[in-house]
Image 1 (cartoon, helix red, strand yellow):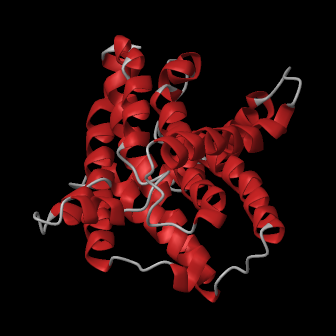
Image 2 (cartoon, rainbow, N blue to C red):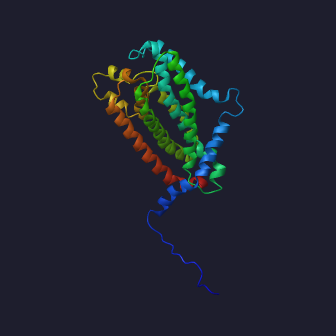
Image 3 (cartoon, rainbow, N blue to C red):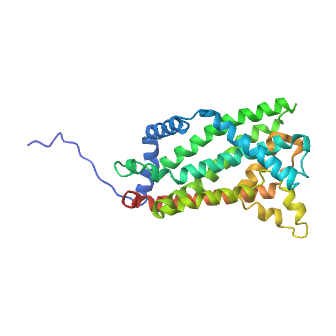
Length: 287
C-alpha cells in the first residue's frame, strides 16, 4: 500500500487544552442552546388559559400584595413618595422576579433534562444558561407593563435609563452564577429542590423589593456599616440600580453598596462556574 499521499498529523496534548476546548464547544453547540431555549419558551405556558399573560400578572399581583403588606400595614414606605409607591414596588419586583424565576428554573434544569444528559455529549452549562434566557424574556414582557404604569401615573423615565442594561446584566450574572451552584448540588442531593422555595421566599424579604434601602440605613444609624453589610445581598445593588436608572433624580445611588453587590456577584459567578465544571463530569452517572 502506498502511503505517500496519506495525510499526516501530530496529536499534541497540552495542559489546559480541555478547558479551552470546552468553551469552544459551547459555540459549536450553539444550535442546541437555541433549541433548548425555544423549547422552554413554547412549553412554559402551554395548556394555560392566560398563556404569556402570566408574565405580567405574577409580578403585578405580587406588587399589589407587597404594597398593602409593607406600605399600609408595616409602614415601610416612609422613604418613598406615597403617590408613586405602587410603581416603586413594581420597579423592584421586576428584577427580583427575574432573579427568582431564573434561580428556580436553572436549579432544576439538569435533573429535568436527564434523558438528554445521559445520551449525548455537550457542554452541560448550556442547559442552565438556556433557562435563564427564558426568564429574561419574561422580564421584557413585564417591563412593558412598567412603561404603561409610567404613562398612567404621568411619570417620565430619567435619561439614566440608558444604564438599565448594565444592572440587568448584573442580575443575569447573579442568577446564572448562583444557579450553576444550586443545579450542581441538586443533581447530587435530590431533596435540595424542597429547600429552594424557602430560599426564594426568604430572599424576597431581605431584598429591597417593597421598601427602600434607606430604611436599613435609617433604622440602624448607630451601626455605620449596616447598609454596606446589607449590600452583600447581590440583589440590593441590582434593585437600587434599577430604581436609580428609572426614577432618576428621585433616587440616589449608593455607590459603595453597588460595588459590594457587584463584587459578590462576580465572586458567586466565578465560584459557580468552577463548582459546576468540577462536578459536571459525574452528572450522567449521578442523575
